Length: 387
Image 1 (cartoon, one colour):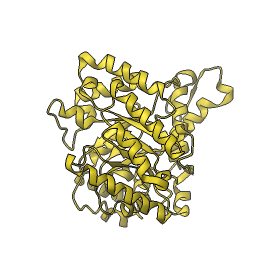
Image 2 (cartoon, helix red, strand yellow; image 1 turned 90 degrees about the vertical axis):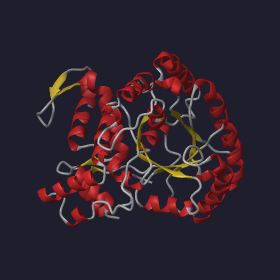
Image 3 (tube, one colour; image 1 turned 180 degrees about the horizontal axis):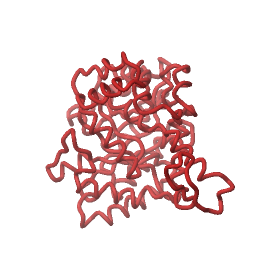
């Protein structure tokens, strides 16, 4: 699979200075963590889940979470597990390419049990999402992932979700973060990425952001995000990929952006129509939040509606200017440091302080590609939607 692999090679050639690379579940963890992109969540109760997975793969989704936790009621869990077993068998029998698939469980015991019940179809599973992750709960979860992998004869990844009150509350946050850090570092080979449960954070204080507000406008949430990145996503080789929070707004039965697709995105009126459509579909806030995610050290995003996937991926593509700066900073002859004017002659590139940024940018360029100099977000968005 690859990002923007669902659009034609000709269109990709027109858009990209450097196209996204192909990757598989067997690719290095560093690549997979960066490539998760918009991770689409779906309740495990959906009766046509296998068809849904195939449909989303055709639309450019590269990672999905099939949820047995908060998205379904307690009474539905047993039926949802049975449904997952049936749907994975159907996915495997179809033999078609699917996104990276993860199951969000409730308890550690489900992990080993589900891996056993999936049988031969378990090779279609990339791993498990571990809810309400703490030091005390985390060890049992991560041990279960290892046991399931041994039982299935393959590697499974874990994605812990950081969402508990202990992490949110100021008086317990430092120790909670230290405990999480100890746990995930002890199981580093199993932990693919860390996910943020911002809805649970808001719930603890009876808060809910509106469609024109980002998670960073809710200061109590912004403070937790900052501290998680501070402790768990450092650029010194000890950090993990931390993904962006869910965007929970969408329009029902929306036909996304269809009017402006009749116009060239290079025309000013086409851009204005797209901007209007984004606002009308409650996605203007999403776009601002994606930008703030990246500015605050997060990569990828939890999504609960297919309409959110293409905007996340379009904004993840590295611009030609970013790529040019990163290349200049990482040139071997710059190893001793120094400062230079950027090739775009609009900023200072200082080799040593900007090196970690450049390395992260080049990883993002690998998995999401580099846009041509004249190609912008509107072009990438409209191309991604015309499928």
